Image (cartoon, rainbow, N blue to C red; front, side, top):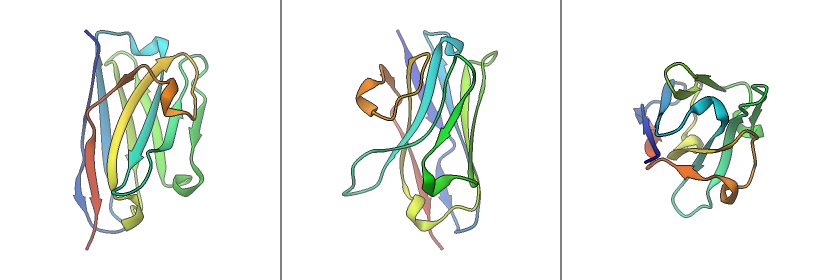
Length: 123
C-alpha cells in the first residue's frame, strides 16, 4: 500500500521559514517525480514545485521562485520543501504527490497523494 505522509506545517510569522517533509512508503521514491501543491480556502489547488526522478530537474511556480527549494533524499524515501521568506499569501494546505518519472503541472496526472499539512503565515 502506497502512502505519502506530509509533516512540518504550522504557524509562522511573515518572513519566517518552514521545512515540509513528504515521507513515502510502498514505493521507491527514486522512480517518481514529486510535486508539491497547495490549496488556500476558496481557491483552486495550484502547483508549487516539482522534482523529476529522471534527472532531478526542478520546477517552481513564479510566486515562490527564490524562496522555496525542493529536494529529495532517495535513501530516506523522503522529499522536502524548504520554504523561506514566507508571506501571508503562502497560507494554504500543502500536499505532496507522486507520479512516474516526470513532472507535470496538472494535479490530475499524479497517482498518489498525501493527506496535506496546514501552513499558516500570520503575525
